Image (cartoon, rainbow, N blue to C red; front, top):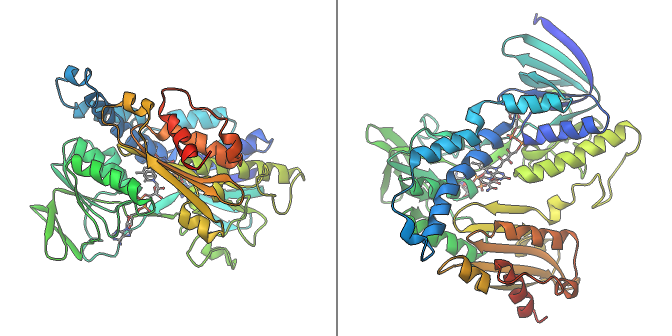
Length: 478
Ligand SMILES: Cc1cc2nc3c(=O)[nH]c(=O)nc-3n(C[C@H](O)[C@H](O)[C@H](O)COP(=O)(O)OP(=O)(O)OC[C@H]3O[C@@H](n4cnc5c(N)ncnc54)[C@H](O)[C@@H]3O)c2cc1C
Ligand SMILES: NC(=O)c1ccc[n+]([C@@H]2O[C@H](COP(=O)([O-])OP(=O)(O)OC[C@H]3O[C@@H](n4cnc5c(N)ncnc54)[C@H](O)[C@@H]3O)[C@@H](O)[C@H]2O)c1
């Protein structure tokens, strides 16, 4: 029989100390509850060590160099190439050298109890923790258990792949050196950002995309990113997928229809799935927790269908796989649990209320940190149509005084989607160097449902790239 080393009771238990788990625990402690946070790897999760932080740290120096090259005057001052060792060193510091003491200290200062080990749901409000060095522990929650277990990479069913030692995004974001050649499988956000990074850091990169590159984007946005990848030397192959992959002393061989791509290293970036398959949910014996697509069914407050005690947030909930949106869900869910524990909230939350994750449906901002950047928020034309909203589209190249001053030969594109009946913004896309900081203006307009006739009075400063707003509104007839 397994020896139980401790048994403790907390108001709430959070499984997974990524950015989302940390935030939901913090919010509940601020709401007056005691919280236990359980982590099996590094406190800080995927984002801090193998995703957002190291990937963006790898990208930035090459983007800054390109920006300097695009300006007469600063271009002439450039006398060398990127210092790859310095780029990797800077990346290491942004990944905290893969040590989590700083984050563990934050957890402790926030008044959250931390236990290291793998958690497993054993029943209603009950969790078992297998700690690497101290055996098995039990923990009981009075009010709620929150799953913030993140997501795991998908493995495409390609003949030969499963047995090979290839890179996932973890290896690509933490690599100590740059391979001479890299084959990237996947044309989503991660594959595209990393294809460009590795090309700019000196690898010969081939990117293989089953369908279209960044297929959810409008065509002109995809075209600008495609052009940039090709200009960086990425061999981009769309509408293709390897039938077989093998490895020998010459490297990885990706066998396509009629040709074989050979590369020293292979990066597989073909999407992620919520990490909810290995936490004891199946053994709970509860029905109806999962949708047909294998995702937990959660309500607006993050509570799992058919339960009054189990919640899921962030990648684990599978609604939006982005750090900032997971942290938004964490704030809403944490507040809902704290309020419910005090009898201040029960039942279903009103849309846009303190306890509803309404922005998940209507206003998710997202930035693809390629160069040019792609910044999107809200609904696409396809999503709007599916919601029964008739939209008017307006788009144009970004060509204003601010953009021409910003870079010689600035290339960009912007699109707004307008709800024809309500005359409010429902979606926006900006593509171009440094457009990420434009995005929040569109997010505010969507969340605030600002009428176009009022938006007309939001005057962009001259000369900034934001002037594109004015051109778009003029094109709409204002
Ligand atoms: C290459 C890459 C780049 C990205 N870049 C961005 C970006 O620029 N911006 C952005 O917004 N998003 C980005 N993302 C997405 C972002 O990383 C995730 O959305 C975010 O990490 C989700 O946070 P989370 O806390 O839900 O999960 P995670 O960060 O995955 O944390 C979950 C934690 O739970 C732990 N855990 C799991 N199961 C158990 C268990 N049974 N017991 C105990 N602990 C457990 C894990 O060890 C992990 O630490 C990127 C993703 C990738 C792959
Ligand atoms: N800047 C950011 O915010 C950022 C950066 C990287 C990742 N992320 C997040 O991380 C998550 C994972 O990123 P991702 O790029 O892996 O996922 P993704 O869903 O964006 O893209 C997956 C890609 O893999 C391809 N694919 C899937 N199955 C395949 C198969 N069997 N064979 C060939 N290709 C296949 C898809 O066609 C698609 O091109 C995303 O949901 C994204 O939100 C965000």
